[in-house]
Structure formats: C-alpha cells, structure tokens
Length: 482
Ligand SMILES: Nc1ncnc2c1ncn2[C@@H]1O[C@H](COP(=O)(O)OP(=O)(O)O)[C@@H](O)[C@H]1O
Ligand SMILES: [Mg+2]
Image 1 (cartoon, rainbow, N blue to C red):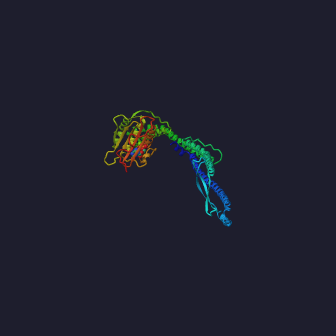
Image 2 (cartoon, rainbow, N blue to C red; image 1 turned 60 degrees about the vertical axis):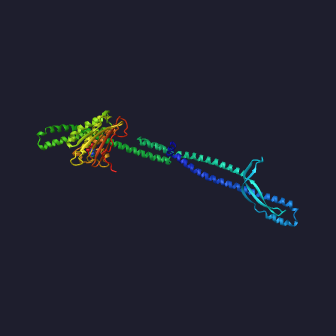
C-alpha cells in the first residue's frame, strides 16, 4: 500500500522505472545481436578451419593409400587412378553434430557439440569409394561463447544500474525545485501569503520560480486590498450604526412625546405620529441588528455557554410569539419529548434564532387551501451527540436555490415585504452566525407550495464536531419526487 502511494506520488520513481524498462529493452536487443554476431563469426571460422583440416587429412590419407598400393597396381592403371584421385578432391560436406564418446577413464559417457566432416576416398586397390568421417569437437568455441555471454550480461547489468543511477540524479535535479514549489504553494494556500520561492540561476526552473513569485505577490496584494476594503466596510457599518444611535435616541424621545399627545391632535397629525412611532420601532430593530452583525464581523461575539434545555426554549419562544400567531390566524404546535433535550449553548442566542425562525414561519405560513388554518410545527429532538429544533410551515415555501440564499444579508424572496411585514432582512444571517458560533448548523429546506423547514442543530457538548442531526432536514410528510 505504502509502495503504491510512493509510486503514484513520485515522478522520480516513475521516470527511473520507465528509463530502466526502455534501457533494458535496448540493452537486450543490442546484446542479443552482438552475441549472434560473435557466435556466427566464431563458428564460421571454426568450420572454415575444420573443413581445411579435413581436406588436408583426406589428402594425406589418399596419398598414403596411393603410395601403399601403387606397387600392387598395374602401371597402366596409374593415370586412371590419378584421374580418380583428382575427381575425389570435391569440397567435403559438413554438419553440426553431437559427439558421444567415452571419457579417458573408458567408462563415463561424454557428449559434446562438434562438427562432422565427410569426404570420399577411392581405394585404388579395389576401386571402391569410401566415405571418410572426421569429427571435430567445438567445446572450446562453446566456452569462448559462454565467456562472451557472461561478459555481455555483466556489462548489461552494470549499464542498467548506471542508467538508473544517472536518471535518478537527473530527475532529482528537476524534481527538487518542483517539490519546493509545491510546499510553498501549500503554505500560500494555507494563508501564509509572504512565502516565496528561492530563485537561483536563469534556467527554466528559475524562470518558473520567478513567475510563481510574481503570481504570489499579485495574489497577496489583491487579497490585502480586499481585506482592507472589507475591513473599511465593516468599520463603516459599525461607525454609522454607532453614530446613528444618539440622534435616534433623541428622535425616539421626541416621537414618544408626540405619540403620547396624539389624542389632542387632529386625525391626520395623529396618524402621522402613529406612523412615526412604527417606523421608529423598525429603525431601532434595524440598528440593533446592524450592531449585532458588526460585532460578529469584528469577531467580538462572545458565547456564554450553559446547559440549555431546548424543550423549554421552544415552549418559551412559542408562548412569546403566540400573540403574533393569533393575529395572523396561525396555529402553533410544539412536538417535543417528555424528557429534557440538553445542549451546552448560549440560551440568549438560541432563543433569538428560534424566535426568528418561528416568526418567519408565521409570516410565510399562509393557508395552502383557502379556509384551512395554517399551522407551524416546532419539533425538538436529541440524541447522544446533538440536539435539534426544526420549524416547519406549510406556506409558500422556497424556490430551488433559495434555501441557501435566505441566509444572505438583506435577501428577501419578495423585496416588497420589507415595507409590509417581517424583520430587517438580517434575521437569518444573524441566526446563521449564532449557529456557527456554537459550532452548530442552521439549514433550510423548502419547496414552492409545500412550505419550508428550518433546522437548527447544536452539538451536545460545546466544541464537539457535528456529524448528523436527530431531525431529518426534509420533513417526513414530504413525498420526494422520483
Ligand atoms: N419559513 C419561510 N418560508 C418561506 N420563506 C422564508 C421563510 N423564512 C424566511 N424566508 C425568506 O427568507 C428571507 C429572509 O429572512 P430573514 O433573514 O428572517 O429576514 P426577514 O424576516 O426580515 O425578511 C425572507 O424575506 C423570506 O423571503
Ligand atoms: Mg425574519
């Protein structure tokens, strides 16, 4: 397994391996060719020598035979015998063979490669032709050949080792800067924007390093600019909100005075005082939300952790939003277990999240069928690792893609809603920040006409990582389209 990972990760290993395979093929082919050449050369020489020797031997034999029998032969036949003599000096025929003989001890059979040469001799005595076979062992040549083979093999293996070593070194030269670049890129990605590559020389790798560094510098500059920009923006929002607080308090006091005195006004002025009061309420909420958001942005939000029973929180929130629900003709239902559902959390924040979810649900719960009472169900559940609250309504629902957008600041499905009902458009973004501060999840599900469900999941112990939620995000009563 480790070897496989090494193989997949190391260019060097792969380069060396492929070079080895290729050079092995080349060395084998060249070696085979050399061996064949040597062998053919050796044997050709040997055959030439052997045939020449056989000729000599035959000549010799014939001369001896001729001289031995010349006296017995009629002088008149001499020319014929001479003619005969010359006619037998044909090229002897030869073949490779295996010579089987007994070793010098006379018992052990030995077989060795050799060449058999056959030539014909005519015996002048009876005028008949005999074939003379001469056997020449070639074991010496075989030995030479074996020697050459061994030398070639050793040379081949050494050559392969050398090639592997050289390739390793060359690949190392190329790979080392690449590895360095990878490490620096990783550190850049991890946010260490000041990391740079060392540039030495002017070769391709040095030019790569220069471009890489340029890219890193540009990135760093742009990220700095963006950070600065967003810091300025956050600062601006925070400053404006703070600056608005004092005049708002004054306007509020004046508005309160007017509102209290509206009985004595004529109807038009009284209506104006009423409107002023409502808008001042909204203004105050918006300002409070903006201040809260800037606290999150500045990283100043603090979590005051306590053991919180989500069942209690759900009941409290439902009780406090019941007047609103009654006003809209919405039925509020809590479905919770009898036992407490505990989580380490900041009770003020959890309550705020839930209040926003419930009031959103009431706002959007509108009857699916005319005449039916819209219902909002708040469900609480928990397991060993997590506790969750889900708020389900059967109203307008969410269009595809909206379940992510609802958490954007000031995002509203219906922009006109800002003037008629609902909060500031910051409710869900604040709720999401609150959930994240707990290491929890806030997720939305919705389908047009089938309502929506918002689910808050918190880890039982603060700091634990969440893996799953005790309540499914898609409500059980929904039939998934196939
Ligand atoms: N239960 C819901 N059903 C349908 N849409 C919803 C629901 N809750 C929230 N939304 C959508 O998300 C938007 C943002 O909600 P929120 O951040 O609470 O701001 P606000 O309530 O002030 O509009 C709402 O304007 C609405 O379009
Ligand atoms: Mg809201």
